[in-house]
Each structure stands twice: as C-alpha cells, then as structure tokens.
Length: 199
Image 1 (tube, helix red, strand yellow):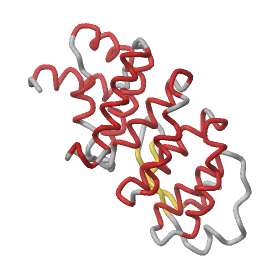
Image 2 (cartoon, helix red, strand yellow; image 1 turned 30 degrees about the horizontal axis):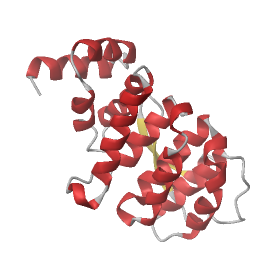
Image 3 (cartoon, helix red, strand yellow; image 1 turned 45 degrees about the vertical axis):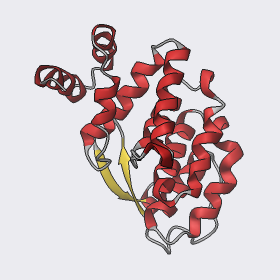
Image 4 (cartoon, helix red, strand yellow; image 1 turned 135 degrees about the vertical axis):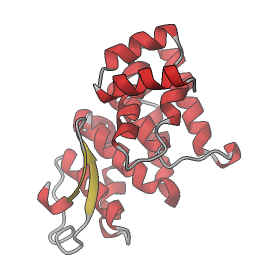
C-alpha cells in the first residue's frame, strides 16, 4: 500500500470517520487495503478496519458488495491458501451493517463453525449481528447453546453472548463455573471482560 494512502486510511480509522472512508473509496479503492489491516484481531485498528469494511460495502451497489463477500468466503476456503481468522468477523461486520441483500450469506457464515480455526470468529460475528438483527441469528441459537460447554473459554463466552443477544436464558452455572472471558469491541475500545459481568 502506498505510504500516503496508508496514512490517510489510518487517520480516518483513528477518527472512526467512515463517511470519509466511503468518500475515499469513490476515488481510490480502499477495500483491499482495509482487509489487509484486519489480520490482528487483538488490535483496535483491525476492528475499526472491519467496521469500516461494513460501512463501505453498505454504500456500494449490492452486486459489488456481494463480490467482496465472495472474495472473503474464498479466503476462508482451503483451496485459497490464504485463510485468515478474521474472515468471519469481516463477514459479520458486512452483514451487521447491511443484511437485507445478503440473508443467504448468514447460513454460509454460520456453517464455518464446524471448522475449529474459524469457530471463535463465527460465534463472535453471530453475536455482533444478533445485537442489531436478532432475527437473522435466531435459527442458529441451538448451535450457540451447544458451545456453552466447549473446552475453549472464548468459544463458551461468545456462545453466551449470542444467546444473550437473542434473549435466550442460559443453563444455570454454564458461564459462572467456567469463568469465560471475551474480547469486546465497542467502537471506541477493545477490552477483555468476563462474560458473567455482561449477562
């Protein structure tokens, strides 16, 4: 990425100026650069880049946004040789920002829960979508319920957040006994918190 463009994108992300990024995208294609900035899911700027991808694709014609979705799905498939653990989160932000044209993508995203490499990201994306569009994730509540007893604390934690966003009761002791923690992005910060403090 040209240094001047990198600096411009970084400055807009720092301010969460998504309108500015949308305007910049009309002059210079920035989506591939934003995707390249999403590889560290423990970095705040990566999350802002993912949120920005959602904002930019929401303003694009649906057929062009679908091409972006297909590229991300291709990244998630083994034959691409370019898997990134942030891919489910990218899809989650696209669907969270503008789900109406892409209802068919939700079950495709959720299906990747079967792959351990993507499981945490899929549940995290499901929780982010469910916060805004619970009806899209409601059919998959049973999947989240199954992961409440998973070995990995983040998996248990994000499963609990999916169910919380859907207004589903949790089995007694399912979280308290496990002390699951999750990384939460709220736009301004990225923090790790115990799930039991969020329920």
